[in-house]
Length: 367
Length: 264
Image 1: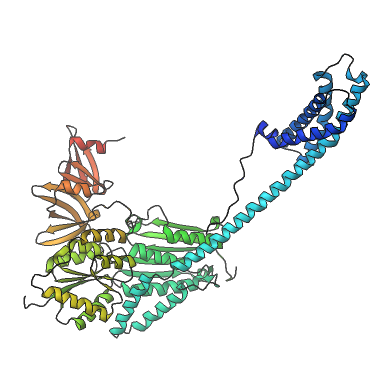
Image 2: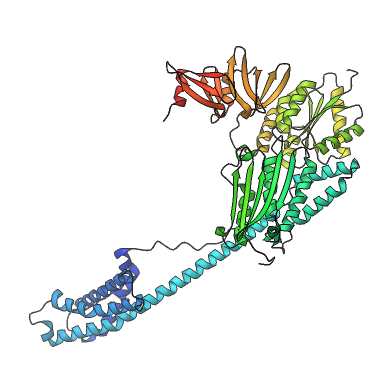
């Protein structure tokens, strides 16, 4: 069942750590070395000085690239962030070059009167302007494609997760249907009706068949209607009433508008089975089940009330339980998100529970 | 040993299944007299105390007190046969404990085997009752059958003498317990009506078995159901008094327990 998940991306670096990330520093150092190879043949001074100057200018460009990456926080619509970064990097070059020549290695005649040094200043500017913005553009491009790839991967992951959930709940639906305990108990009852020659035997058997037909799921059938759901609920309740005539009463109330609506298969049945299993069956005196379906604006509201033992007595206080949780997951998948459906289970005074399902009202069977 | 017909009790919450078993037994064992039918475990125990049948057919899955829990109350005083629709775990446990069981729908051939075994045991001079050591097995099975099987097991039922008869009372229906010489007095509600009964278990022993979230000892000789309390009034000398919902009695709270009702 488990699927391989790509490892989570490391937390993003912040502040200076982000501006001078090791990869960026390495890129600047390598670029400075490459550029130095071009200038070195005509260089009259020590290599360390050449490399130092190139590196210094490179680091300033990196700083402005990094600063403009996050500042200013908002840009006018006509100015792209990457454009600003590339321009900023280019604009840094002359200032950094002047700083290097005028302040860091001052000389007696200022550098602009010394031909050799002026040439060096010019080369520094030239290469800075050639290489810096180009590196900035490629860095931005890498970032953009990286983000796109990550997004695609995340999307793929979400999609496969959803597919897995859908398959899971389908599987659980298959497994959950027709408990052997229910089936054998019911058959034992039916046999007694037959042995006793009761005229009830045939109608009860018909209800059992109707229940089994719906409860043994046909996979291709993705939707049902409230009308058909209520027929199924009635078949189930008739079977249960044969089994516990002294402990179960029921009533089904639904208006025509609600009956015509689409409804995922076995939604109402799940609520009713839950009410019998956890409310009526554990109670010595049993109780009454009321099934209601109505339309509220653009929503279908289905309610199942029971006067059974209640939430605390059946150990369900504060939770939906497995059946209703599975139902909610299944409905959320059918209706495109948990925010579109509501499944609740609350206590009713003086005793019993009320389970509610609220769904978008859809008229057509297909979705 | 005796000329009287053997007697039996059938407990099942589904009436058709009670009559089904009675019908099958009438064929397989015509001499057996079904003296009573019960709708749940509590009725089964109460009717058993009344009529003491030789054999009890107990449905495992019943509302309130399950068949397995009822078996614990009946103990070795009768021959027990469990009946279950489908429960692999229960069936395994019965096999393991050498207990008699039937699977629903009951097969006549299988029932005939069970009847033969029961006749043999009833016919023996000193009828060997179900083996001891099955209590622990039944306890484990009962805990598993309950939905909240994982929760710590507190006392859920009390068997009371009310006048000449025996009643099985759910612990939730008990208002308070009071030590009374040799006995413990149990004040409970029968469908809202206040009732009283006696048990032999000392209060101290009961107190250890009660859920502390529901019951509190308020006096050396009194344990009260917190849900039954109407109000608590302070009286002089750092003691207090408890008034109950729907009962006239006033319960004392002794000095060492008044902290339970102090306001934060």
